[in-house]
Image 1: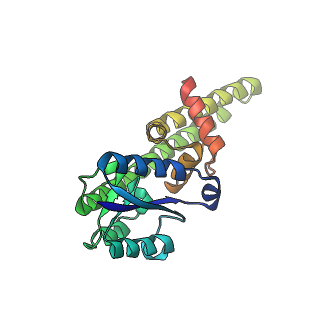
Image 2: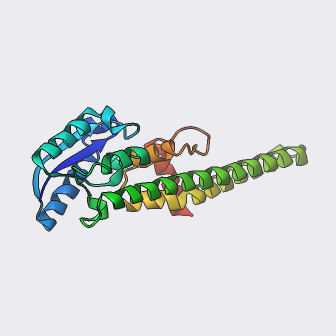
Length: 228
């Protein structure tokens, strides 16, 4: 069996620094060696996984090349092809080319790849909904506790301030605990701090202060989890 590898990262910064690309290449090369696949080439692209794959020139050209040379297209993980179920469906429904996903194994055919993409989308939606609901509940509780503290201790500002700091710390600990499963899952899958921040922002999960995630904020949250 012949195959051409495809690797992708989302930003020009990742493309320039090679973050993620080398790991994807290593996964593809090792997989091909173990399964006796003749790896003709590995192509990389720096672009978002959103939208129609035909708007990604490198992937679109590579698919045409694979059809012409009658070889498979191999990626390390399913989201390197796309994060969009509809786009995945359009790709794998083409019977003139076989897609191989290292993460799913050689036995996974195009139909199974489509199924896994659908399940992954459901999981992302579920995680997003659960996390947003939990964060909203924590926010409402924090507001309520803050109001009660402000109204209940006007004569002793030092004590009120101390209790306020305790509440802030407790809320931060609870926030970190709520995201622990998600963060630890990303870490177990080899995501860097930068990659984790990208995923959290994609899920529209705000930081404890309501902003967007950066590698530093992810690192701070992991340190808080390690202390708890």
